[in-house]
Length: 312
Image (cartoon, rainbow, N blue to C red; front, side, top):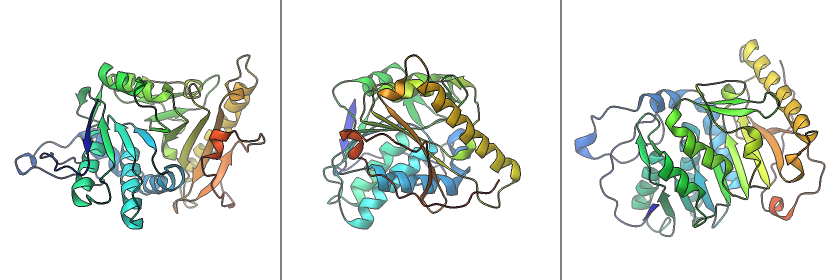
């Protein structure tokens, strides 16, 4: 693993073209080819991703946390929201962020240079690994080993997916690129207090090329697993709203299947799905939790759920 002190003067960093927050550019690299997948994905469901990012940064990130963050355009926005919160409030969170996402690494260096007093004690740590151009991340065995290492234990792991299936018996995540699977699986199974899958609603019920972790696997080595997703607008096409409702129904069936399975993982781990609207408010949570939260759960701020009438 390699890291930077964000107060240090960073080396020249190539501009990362994501359709999102921009990192500093070295003059001789400004004409480099934009990563095609990141560029395209960065503008899809942009409003939903921004709302998810604000919600995650506001409700789950706390002072002094160790946070692992994986690849993906939604995670890029979450990282920017984490930095924005500290800048807007003038309050440093003194985080240690381990990531294999080079966009997030560059954002950390850039904000450390612009706001040295605020981010003096923020640590941005790179996993190392093999460069994957399309997702502007490092992947492979070295990245996976850094994520799984016992040297640094995260309070919070944030990961994404290109597709999320709630089909029985175990559901699953899928990805665009085969070489990202090892690091993505490490993020999905490493030890942590709280694992969060952040994905906009267009990913639900979608299946991409390469199969990664099952949802059952996400429940391992953690006491709390949260899926945070967006919802269609009221004026969205009927098929989009129907697909979203179908995904929620599938999630309920999946939870019930896990609960009645011989090795019920829900006796050890709480699984929940939170729906966030365009204003960054949680408007629904599935399933409604009836059991008393554990001490580790109590550290996570429970959202105020804004009730609204949903149309299909």
